[in-house]
Amino acid sequence: MKTGKLTRRQVITTASAGFFGAMINIPFKSIGISNNLQQKKLAINGGEKTHIGSWPQWPEWDRSAEQGIIEMFRSGRWWRGNGEYVAEFEKKYAELMGAKHCVATSSGTTALITSLEVMGVDAGDEVLVSPYTFIATYNAIFAHKALPVFVDTDPETFLMNPKKIEERITDRTVAIVPVHIYGLPVDMDSVNKVAKSHNLKVVEDACQAWLAEYKGKRTGTLGDLGCFSFQNSKNLPAGEGGAIVGNEDSLMDRCHAVHNCGRPYGSMKTAPGYPYRGGNFRMQQSQALVLMSQMKRIEKDNDIRLANALYLDKKLKAIPGIIPYKLADGATRAVYHLYPFRYIKEEFNNVPKNKFMRALSAEGIPCTGGYGKQNKDGLFEEAFNSRGYKRLFSEARIKQWRDENHLPGNDQLCDQAVAFLQSMLLGSTKDMDDIVNAITKIYENRDSLVG
Ligand SMILES: Cc1ncc(COP(=O)(O)O)c(C=O)c1O
Image 1 (cartoon, protein in one colour):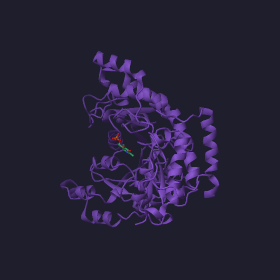
Image 2 (image 1 turned 180 degrees about the vertical axis):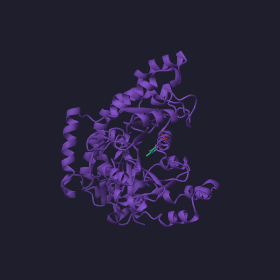
Image 3 (image 1 turned 60 degrees about the horizontal axis):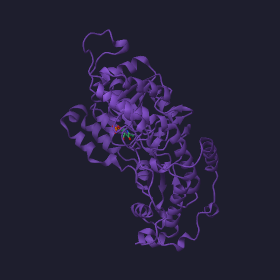
Image 4 (image 1 turned 90 degrees about the horizontal axis):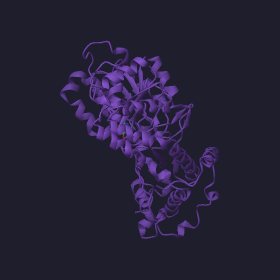
């Protein structure tokens, strides 16, 4: 893997310099990146690429995990029922998060399903959720035969707009699921305030936000329960895996029970038999061992990603039509599962986003267009037309849902968003300069993309 050549101290210095630099509006020409790039032909039109060579690969295997994994497999103790590693991981992860407890799960999706169950989400209930997220967030709500109700996105922050929550609450709403998408922390005080005044539960989807901070506290520890994913692409990867963190003993005992077939746990242990419903959402011993080896690097990696992200913020915001994400009020540390910005095509002679992205990829800078307008995808109509949802929700309620399914902030964001993968942020300063130079080159040569 390529890493930045900064020491930890330099990273922190660069990061804070970048943070304050990001607040200053630096004129486009003054950042020294426009070296007659208009004279260079774009790679998509047959010119030379800006970035030659590869980007850091992800995930990266840690050989120190191998001995323990082989021994565990040879011992036959492959599952948490007769092994120690899942419990050891839970203890370490809770400590890392600054939470009292952690329950490890098979995935982020099963962490969300378990948490919503424990929060009392039931068939026919409604759950407020951000539309700008991976589809698993809604699927976890559907798994309970509840109705996902969208709160519009603030296109500047990429996050649920807390000012839009209240208008979507009905007498069936039981919970809010804010999503710290791309590792950008949601303004949790505002979310919790609305939740408290309407007696709603808060399950944070922190599946992309390991060690992000809001007012100095880790995301996932700010609502009633917080959920994480350790799927292969994630900044803390294990192929598959998930976790729930929380501070309340009885809730976390319930999470343990629900994720383990309903077996009573902790304070519930005296109950005979299987008094609760549950599923098998357990993490495997091998996943826990991989995670403990990957956990050793996450803080250092986050420092490098942060330093590079702040460097990009400062340089990219000087290019007309490129607007990096804005941190929400109270966010004190983002962790960048992706690095996102908005592309304003009007500043690029109306070159469509897809064409801009193709031109950027041709320059050797891979990028993604982020999430689509999933609130208009078929899965909602599929659910509404199912026998179960027809029994649970009146025609009038579904009509109201459809009438309210206009999310201008989210639509705008889906049209404008572009993002780089977290692994690219583990590159060198030269790599970051290549990103800036490639976008600058496209801007300077935007006319050649028209038509
Ligand atoms: C925001 C978000 N929520 C939930 C999930 C679900 O996690 P998993 O894939 O581990 O089930 C993911 C994973 O990609 C995610 O990014």
